[in-house]
Image (cartoon, helix red, strand yellow):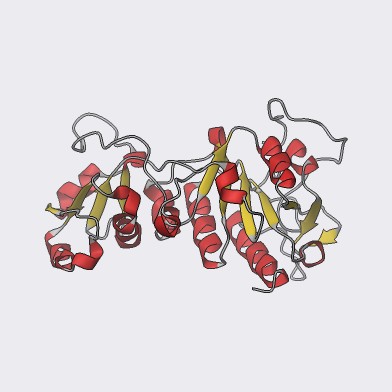
Length: 300
């Protein structure tokens, strides 16, 4: 929240509270990590912890599950997933896995009744007949993500809704971003509904989870990055703020926007002009617009 200061942040003088990613009072625009593996695939954290509990007296932990075709296929293709996880598929999906290209790292599907699979997963999970029980993803260091300085990075400041974060991953991968930076304490696991919303992008896009976003911005500046924070009350437009230098796009939570100390560590605050008069955008939509503009400014 914008009213909460980050621990051990350094002050740079008051600028007033930022208001969000677009041009209205709501919406905000500036969330974890990866181990360098082939094609930018993310690595797992910990080991698989045995068979799922289903509905036998305990809540299912969504951080241990991926479901839906795109997230599951992407995870199976991730080299870091080799030798771990449990792949469950319904009878009508089993024939699809006769193609060895879908399981390049030796995962063998277990057939399961669709109703039983639904019971194993969190309520409302649209599994499309397949799920993968596997450990949460590990992260990369900020230096591994950002050095050398080139391209675009997205930083999420307390964006916690899994659907929004998943959509940001999807857009970031589509527009060729280097990766995502999130704060350790205020970001969801890269699994479950988030992975479903990302359509598999969480398995392919590096993500660094840091303790303190302001310090991360200082380190990124040392490495040659320029930070552009989206703030609906800014006077500068996004198009005017962007150029061809390595750019960190900083997005804040909807409603609160970027926190003050994080905003103070941005090189410039900018807004998305809204000639239609509508006051705010969903943070994932605002991020997609910012990524498009940043990619265009860099000649991509």
